[in-house]
Image (cartoon, rainbow, N blue to C red; front, top):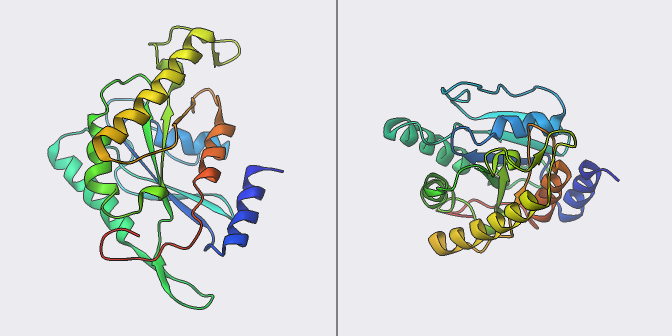
Length: 230
């Protein structure tokens, strides 16, 4: 059974609205657009290859009838730009929709996925993003964290270019990095998260774990909008 089929079944059992709307956030260069393309198995989202960020606003991409990802602009491009991007993320999390089945107003975004760069040790930008633009507007159980660019975690060393996977040394390093990120976020934000999944969108490594992580964080009920978080 495919992950999309499992997602569809679980959403119907829980009475969730279709599709599941997931907002991807992270620093510029973390690979949000690349992640969307890798999961879609097609170039549906523009990917920047230079120093300038490619995503400047929030755009939606349907993965299936039950799943839609929303790509947001990355942070880390200067104070003025970061402030604009935070406001865009905030507005997205405050956006509502009305159910055609029984009425009722609910949050348009169902959950948030924070994507970190595997080769970056400084989590300051991502932690600030969580504290200022995400957690004040959505419940922490609706937030998942993942680590992209597993191939660059040790600056490209110990990555098997033939199998497109880490060797034992890099695999151990990635496991330690995931545990470190988990502890750092808990210490900085008070958010107790599941251990992040490490993957590589560029090499399509561990993408099944990415979808499994989304399934594991599937909300158990519709997101009712309150004054701050829901």
